[in-house]
Image (cartoon, rainbow, N blue to C red; front, side, top):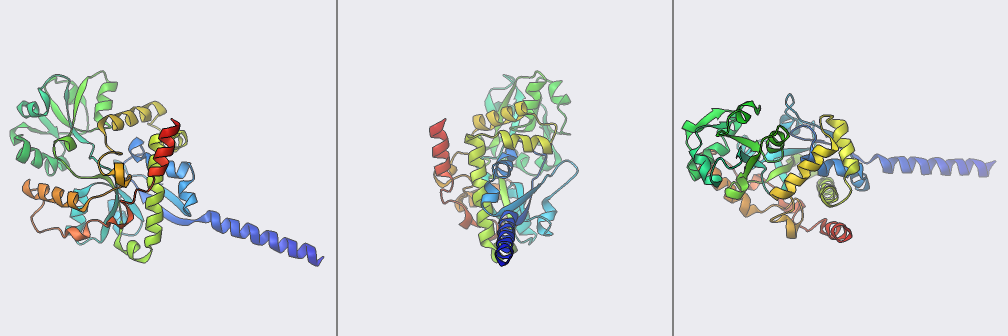
Length: 338
């Protein structure tokens, strides 16, 4: 009888220990839009068990047209936030909101200008367009840089309402575009377009950055490192491995997506050279350069987007979690087997 009781206690202890191991540290990560291929590394790390391997129980909270996740990070409702570009991070520092960028998963910002194929002679020719459609946010960010550096003028400017109807109805119209979105939507409606990635003309911000609160960095840097490492691995596996399970999670979260659409987005990202390029090639996906962030800050100052001296650059990013070549072995293994 004693033997049976002891055995039962041992089994119960084993089950409890396994349950504790499986639970992991709860982490809530927010995105800035509906699930898509550009979020693939995060979904991949859930789908293939990478987060679980790192002792993390990760929930992804989608952003979208009616939900701005950004304030939720500072409020403590999110642990990590997938942000857009460095201008938003500059804004947090300027407003003394204690968050930091800890990784940059896109080496190039997918922001672009889009024109009908052959309508203009290259990027410089776009300055001759009568009309350029720009959202309100764009008018106060990269449009100012386009005017300051590339010779565009405010007489060209018209509001963009995130509807392609105007562009499709006018062969001479130019509009802003997210490189992995509007060009694909236009193509799906039969339009042939030229896509000019702003990053290729000097708009040097990182994109799809990962932010967290300074408090979390101070109190639990080991958790931050685990999340960053696991996400880096997720991106390598998503880009170079089998992403079918990640596709399934993305589609479940955003039913407007299909495997075919996700494949097209991935092809576009590869063609535009957005993720595994530049610093990521040697330092790993997520890499950031302090000098590059300082250079972009100077670009933003020159264009009148931010005021000189308004941002303490030492508070923008924490570089200690990246630039270590993490995941390069995964890439080598996957590319060798393909």
